[in-house]
Length: 311
Image (tube, helix red, strand yellow):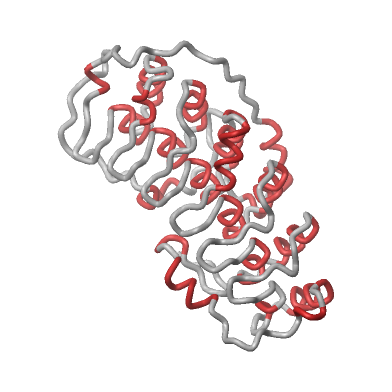
């Protein structure tokens, strides 16, 4: 390959959090950029979700013993040349390597942060490269060192086009697995889009089969509990309309209604009071354990207090 050259030094830090400068970039289409402000553009986002379609044709398998020297090159961070091409958005080089490695384990190589090329394509918001990787046989179920699949990252970023590419290109069994996978903070994809208020993605995940009452592993909060915690009235309405259980209990025995105490939005409190079973309206005798569990379970980039999203 004409772009082959050895890499021995650290090219750049490509952790998801180090790419924050790219979060503001939009994506106009499958090759460009689209705005990820889903919470305020629900209709536009829903149209975008409907528009994006993939035509994935199975490609021939490349023999594992067919070794190209450029596949063996690694930086001190464990990045392959494909990782680097995606990080630096060298699309032509990335596409060429993908085409030469269809169904080869090279495409699933994880760097020292356990990021695959698929993770990096989502982080850098390159849906065309993402689609090509999926067509070439990348495994979307692999997780990084935070326990996130590529779909978790798309949900956290609110990247509508990457979300669409991943959910349409994977098999039904892969999609089911990704919807139930908890990252190392104990959160699945629905928890992440609920925390960040991406209403259109909440709707789409529920349509795809995500459990609307799934509990966070650390404290047992459902998406409805999270919506109350963050005082997101639109999300509360949406989840209730989609069948969320208003009587679900955290591990500390608290319903979503209990979490309205001390919060400023009385409309949420009134709505949940009327829907909550009478015997579950009173606060449990024990003190809340949820906040203490939150402190132990939150990761640095997903910390939030009871009212405001942090970081």
